[in-house]
Amino acid sequence: MNEVSISPGGSLKGSVELPGDKSISHRSLLFNALAAEPARVSGLLVSEDVDATRRAVEALGAKVVLDGKDLIVHPPKDGLTEPRDIIDCGNSGTTIRLLTGVLASQPFFSVLSGDGSLRNRPMKRVTKPLKRMGAKFDGRENGDRPPLAVRGKTLKMTHHDLKIASAQVKSALLLAGLNSGVAVREPRQSRDHTERMLMRMGCTLRKDAEDWLVLIPPDELAPCDVQVPRDISAAAFFMVAANLVEGSEIFLENVGINPTRTGVLDVLTAMGADVQVYPKKLKGAEPVADILARHSPLVGTTISGSLTVRCLDELPILAIAAAFAEGETHIRDAAELRVKESDRIGRVCDGLRAMGIYVDERQDGMTITGGVPLGGAVIDASGDHRIAMAFAVAGQCVRNGLTICGADSIASSYPLFFAHLEALQQ
Image (cartoon, one colour):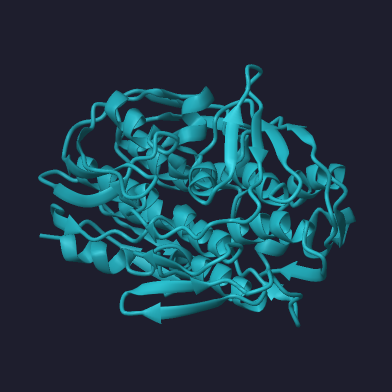
């Protein structure tokens, strides 16, 4: 399914059983592999990226056992052990960056690598602050590209004043500080799944008067049973699709609405979208809600500052919404998109232009002038799952449809995406 053609198929109606949250799925496996006792994980995302994390913790001595629909994570009795081979992180940036933090303080040698795309992802934003804690690395381009050799050792407590808000970098540093302690400060709040889960596992995390997030490690990590909520990043594709396709109404159940992740809801509300949110009880440390999205005309808006951080992964599909909206949409402060699975700013701008939409591309974002996209174009997803899914939604709305190259990348995060989209077509 490397190349797929999408064309309008009428209104979209029904409900979707979304996959589990990708960020929480990664963390539920990795963090519980560090715990003192086994833990149960329900609703884990089944995808190539999360499977990479599962294989990694098993290579480090943990056992992950299927129990009905749940998984039981059994941490190694005496702590993680040196892997016998290179750990293959596949296409998962979360896996390799969080593991780098974990392995930096382990008393053994390990090597992290991945597929062609991951081997071109920058690592220095993680390894540079870890080196300040005393960590040792070897890698391509002075440690900025995998394969990355990690020579684990005892680290020192260090303060890290980050220049870019990044949940992956922050999480890597917090994990590296589980033995020594660590303090991290971000220019803006990134997603806080790591903090929530570590506090449930016995860590003390507090912010001081100068906004430093200080981690005080426990003697050992307590196990953390996790019921993974549905992924709001996956929900975003269907919320936008419902609003763009006339006559549509889509119901999404048990979606995670962590406040650090709900920027997509704020943006769609500002654009005039019909998105109703019905909050429910917490699932563990994470708030959840049912969401109902219906067709509604959209208008342009501005996405910048902390709002950009809160919807960074959703910006490709929000750009699709902007292409159909009345007026201009300005996306700013999103330079981080340049170093994701692809250059997402470049890929989105190229795709929108191919659809006949005027886009002013900038280093940190773009301005999109909404209109009536014609379609009939070939979109290069560059092996990036979010680009492929975003333009698959666009293909439902443009008169001449779209052909997407690299659609097989969707398996990394949402293998059933096309099946769910097809099931909604009336």
